[in-house]
Image (cartoon, rainbow, N blue to C red; front, side, top):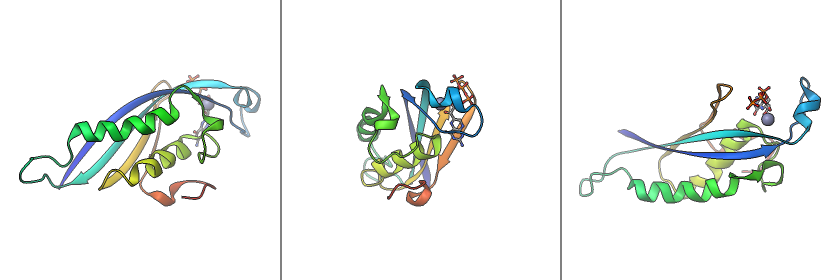
Length: 128
Ligand SMILES: Nc1nc2c(c(=O)[nH]1)N=C([C@H](O)[C@H](O)COP(=O)(O)OP(=O)(O)OP(=O)(O)O)CN2
Ligand SMILES: [Zn+2]
């Protein structure tokens, strides 16, 4: 069994309702995100590939386009623009296109924040 992964970066703005740091979080502000997508499978005996990385990249491009340079509050079906919901949104977006999808991890490198989604029921309050 193999794991094959690919990453993409996106820049996005959001607001959040929080108990702490409430006022600055409510204002529109931006973050740099990095998403890592992992699929699990066995290499095809003819091609030697779990999945052609070019096809992998094409699938990720659609998800990236839905998030990059967006106001995340306005992204359909995302819900509150947390890292948890971003990981779940990317999962839902890719699940139909990437057989063997195993996990989606969203990183905010500037603050060391990392969130991993392992399946479709991981979102909060948004129907899968
Ligand atoms: N469980 C979660 N908690 C928080 C999330 C989240 O997605 N899941 N997100 C936030 C906010 O995005 C918040 O803006 C992060 O705030 P903070 O850690 O203070 O980092 P900065 O805004 O200072 O980050 P910079 O990129 O350095 O500006 C909070 N909690
Ligand atoms: Zn934020």
